[in-house]
Amino acid sequence: MAMMQSTFEPTQTQPIFVVPLTSQTKSEIPHKADSYIIYDFVDSETSDALFYELLNNEIKWGRMFHHGGPVPRLVCIQSEPDDAGWSPLYRHPTDPDTSSLTISQTFSKSVKFIGDIIQKQVKHPLNHVLIQLYRDGEDFISEHADKTVDIVPGSNIVNFSLGAERTIVLREKKGRKNHDAGRTMPLPRMSQRVGLKHGSLLVMGLRTNKFCTHEIKPDKRPLGQKTVDQMKFDGVRISLTFRYVGTFVYPDIHMPVLLYGIGATSKTRNNPARAVPVSDEDGVGRRQAVELLKAFSDENRLAGEFDWSASYGNGFDVVELPAVTSELI
Image (cartoon, rainbow, N blue to C red; front, side, top):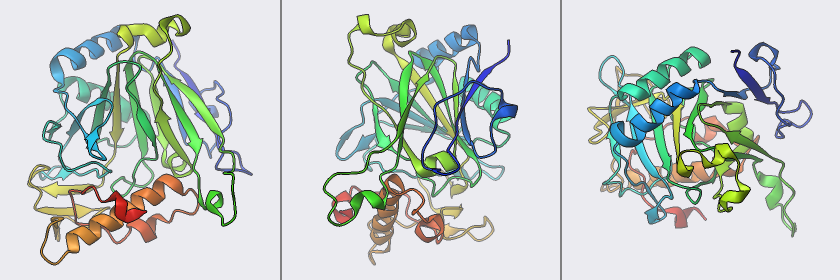
């Protein structure tokens, strides 16, 4: 059976907008469209087996904290070290208290199986995965853009879904234009809703991430208002977001001493930088952390105005990010 594919195609005249999904083959996707979804990427029988294996046996679910409280879903992080044992580092806003969060330096069996077949689709390596468990319709993820300080340019962010269908909402970023002096009402932001079905693969290019945020809102509707796909597996959903990360730490993610790569001050492995703690005596770590979190905030809000090179290009050697959001307002 041929796989169904659809595209998010930014228009030529208004590249920050996405147009309605259309079913077409990969070869028909216009050049500028860098995101699409494949339904039945993995057949239903295999997807069922993967769901139960990940849910019940393979993943040790833990808590991730943000703004002083746990995020409304359970989480596990896995990654694949490079040929010299350096572990991928993907930084995004979280509180440092992640004591219950499992971070594995290897892909588990089912995760590797999924990652291998996705790599054939996107044609580039995937060395980091954030696995999230949405326990019911009330679990959600807030509106955000993925943080690209550590992501390899030109790669894709890919999300594989298992379990109950949830809806991802892509929305035009706010940008500076919504914050002009004297404006009392924000400009409307175009949005698009996409169903993430059991066994589907969403491939999101960095162009889409540059111009759009995404979120999965809570779904508190009564069962009578939900579809069969939305009620599958008692409403439980597993999300696997794979990335190609280009920043690496050594000896491991739990006790980073050295780092290099796209998001570090040192770009090469033969001359790595030393990881800077937030609490270092001269304040370098805290200043870097505040600067990085400010760049994260800008990437959430700004579209075409966000300058990756100016914001991230010099690199950051701080690994653990403190809760200092009040300093960014």
